[in-house]
Structures are given as structure tokens and as C-alpha cells.
Length: 190
Length: 219
Image 1: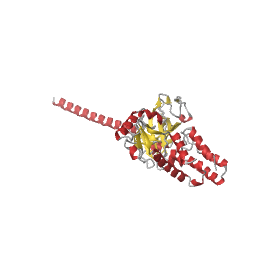
Image 2 (image 1 turned 60 degrees about the vertical axis):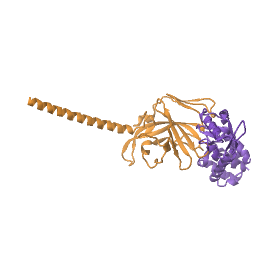
Image 3 (image 1 turned 45 degrees about the horizontal axis):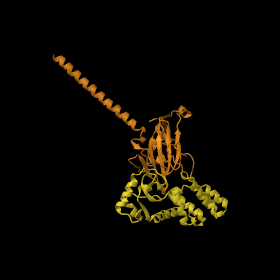
Image 4 (image 1 turned 180 degrees about the vertical axis):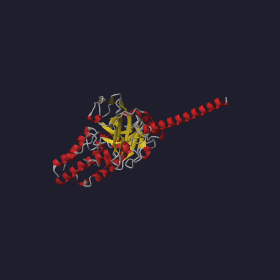
């Protein structure tokens, strides 16, 4: 699995929309959870918004209108695509670079959690990155048994040890499909 | 006439003194009862007029890596009050969300949603480890007062404890509505639940604990 393949999966796990939507707390958001504190924030985040009908770059007034429209929309709608009808604009550029920025933080947190990160099989590396993306560095550090099991697996290189490590990766409170995917990526071994 | 006037003046003076003494006594009694009342947690889930410290509530939170009930199930609210251990500053939003940044990174927050008929408080918690996730749960807690040993380990005094009686995990960024009713809590549907879930609370049975000198408090 390479980075672009993982990014596709991350968008499914986290929810993704190329237009503004409300996150679970009612904040205006775009892409994969990029928080927009105000209408101007999209520009400062390096995101280019364009009009869906004309294809032209959006004016500041159009961006403000979309922001206000989404802000007033009903909360708690999932997936984010349900907010499309409240918008006229879409992100024509910049979303992937914003996502990659968050991904770099997750990679750094994963390496801090497991210093021997580069010795892991590639799929197990993406599993740790995914956990770090969702849990943050502090949350990932709570997985003490996973770390110990991975250390053992890296040393032995045995598939059963990777399977044992995979069992320690389960996060409460996320979709079963995401937990299943992470289990498979770690259990795969070398 | 003069004698009658003197007696009347003396009577009037005595009455004024009695009135003054009565007013002073009433002020002292009301002042004491106010002070005692301030020690008791209120139905608004405050102690000494302040929100319960979020780090105290966080004690009931099992690690995100552990799927299990709370390991710590009771905290001493009286002892935590004004302590160095719980001096970390926290923020209270206008919507009642009380949050604290964690030294380890991330943050923890709770919101008091209300109380059931039996005095069980319902609290919605969320843990953020610094990533995209906000891991939420419902916590059901009860206050109780108990005569317990104080700091010197010799004397005893009445102290207030907070006990976690149940924890219901929600989900990452769970947007389900939670409705607190008299003897039940309804957890609305979300991407984690196709249908609402009703959490019922039976009337509390007598337990061996109740035979002790402890008494459960329904603020």
C-alpha cells in the first residue's frame, strides 16, 4: 500500500467532502476535518474554492455566503456529502496538501510511538499512521501492549506474532470496518 | 406617671435588646447553614459553586486502548477541592462544557446533562488525544457523603465522594442526541446506532454499603 492508496482509505474512514460541511460539534469544516474558523480561513489554509456551476474561482462574498449557509444548516448530518445542497462552491485545489500536512504529523507521532518504525512491514506502518491520525500522539501512547507485541513481532518476524500484535490495535468508539482494516494491515506481517 | 414612663422606657430598651440578639442569632444561624450548604454538591453538579474539576472526572475514563469499565470508580471530591493535585486551570464554556488540556497532550471535557430521579448525574465526556478523534461516553455518577479519616489519619470528618456507577461508551465524534428522563436515558441514533438506545435505571436496592455509616446523597 502506498501513500495515495492510504489517503483514499483515510477519506473513507474519516469522512470527506470537497465542499463545506458541519462536523459533529457543529463547526464548519472542509475536506477531511479541516476546521474553518471563519470564511477567510479557507484561503489561509491554502484551499482554492471554485463555483460549481461556472467553474470560476469564488469571490470572497461567495465564500462568505457558503460559510453562512452551512453554518445555518442542520447539525449532525453524516456523511458530509449531505451538506452539498447548502453549498455552491467546491475545493478545486489545496485539500490534498492540507491533508498531507496532517498526515506528516501522524507519521511523526507514529515514529515517536514506535522508534523502530522503519523496520515494520509497510502495511503495519500505515496501520500505526492511521491510529496516530485518529488518536493523536497522546492517544497512541496508551497502546502499550501493542507496542510490546510489535517489538516482539519485528524481532521474530513470525506471522503469529504480528497477529497477536494486531489484536492489541483495537480502538473503542470507531467503525468496525476501520478496526478490521487496521487488524488486517498489522496481521499481514512481512 | 414618671415611674410608669421609666418602666415603659426600660421595657422598650429590653425589647430592642431582645430584637437585636434575635437578629444576630438568626444571622449567625443562617450564615452557618449557608456555609454548610456550600460544602454540598448541588443539582447543578457544582461543588463550592465551581464545576467539578475535569481531571477528577477523567479519573473514571479507561484508556482508549482498553475496552473495559472504569478502573477507578470513586474519587474524594472534598479532598480534591482546593488541592495542588487538581489546581490545573480549566475552561467552562457557555454551553456548560468543562474542558482541560492534558499534560500528556490532547484534552478532556465533560458536560453535565442532568440528573435522574434517584440523584444519579448524567455526564457526557469526550477525550481527544490530539488527532482527529473525539471519543465520547456517557458517565453516570452519584455523590455520597461519608465520615472518613482526614489527612492526619486520626480524626474523622464528613467528606463527599463521587462514584461512577455506569459508563456507556458512545463513539468517535458521536453526534447522537442524549435525553435524560426521570429513570432512563435515551441515546439517539447516529452513525454508530441505527436506532435510539434506552438505558434504564432501576430504583436503588439496599446494599451492604447502606448498613454502614455512609449515606447516599441525592442533591
